[in-house]
Amino acid sequence: MAYELKLPDLGEGLTEGEIARWLVSEGQEVAEDDPLVEIQTDKTTVEIPSPAAGKVTQILVEEGKVVPVGTLLVVIGGDGAAVVHKSTVSGSEPQSRSGKATPLVRRIAQELGVDLDSLTGSGPQGRITEQDVRAAASPQEGRREPLRGVRRLIAEHMSRAHREVPAVTWVEECDFSNVDLKRVVATALKACAESLQEFPELNARLEGDEIVYLDRYDLGVAVQTEQGLVVPVVRDCDSRSLDELQSELERLAEGARAGSLAPDELRGSTFTVTSAGKLAGLFQTPIVNHPEVAILSIGRIAERAVVHDGAIVSAPVGYVSVTFDHRVVDGARAAEFGLAVIRRLQA
Image 1 (tube, rainbow, N blue to C red):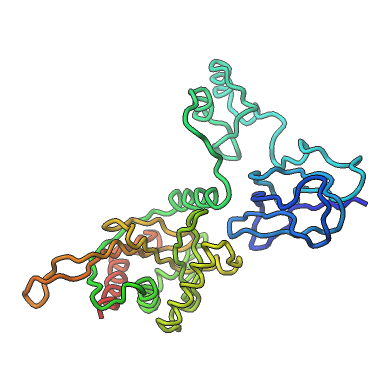
Image 2 (cartoon, rainbow, N blue to C red):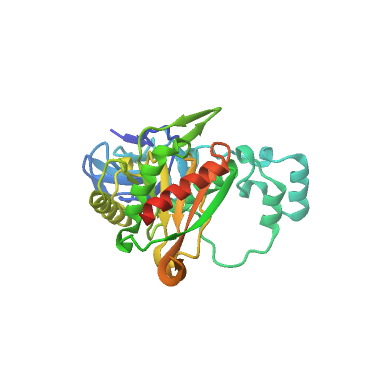
């Protein structure tokens, strides 16, 4: 008997997934519940076990492909006579792409000698645009790699945030003399959580024509990994001590770099904090982590000349930036929030 594994509904409203890595090959014998395939979603990477024991008869979707829920991925067992051919499981791939282009674009493609069936449209609903055709007709140079895995998700997420959020960035300097710089992110989380209680519109999200004010303070922290930027979530930042926040930050950062975080540890943040440490420039204008409405970043902290009590002295100074969604947050309120965070960092 043949067993067919289809891409399951992984919850959280997800409708598609990327085949990140096959853990078996065709012809290989597997036991029930053996690791079969890794699926990359817009939240995390999920390992799917084998539904049955037997030989892997056919793998139907290659690594790097993004397919909708319900797509047949692999057949286990059976004699292979009834196995579906790979060309029949390409999900939403059309038989011909000529219908995905306007008459004008089809004429340009004919003039330039571009095969429309070879293109993937970048327009709405996959429509092939004139730019797609002209790009295909241009000489190709340099080494090319498809966007895959975490990098593809980052590109999609950042593009959506940049497209949908009318963002503004506010910047001010901060004296970090009273902050243990080894714990600067944890200290910033505490300061942000306390300040967000005063400015609830920054701890919110926009859903349709409603602003949803959140009464939890689960803050995301941007962590750079070899696979790309991920944002694990530190829960209950308003009620945890600085020591607890530091310990949780270290655990999440280690898990992010090892790729071992659970899906729940990467979703549900209400506000985000980012700091590039020694790699940071003077300040940043970070992109809002959609569907949040604000993000705070800390620039490079260095000894600079400042005036204290009428005297010029050296102090560790850095710039604090707040990027915010201007549909939800007014400029004055964002500035007041930023100053409230700085006041707590300098206390």
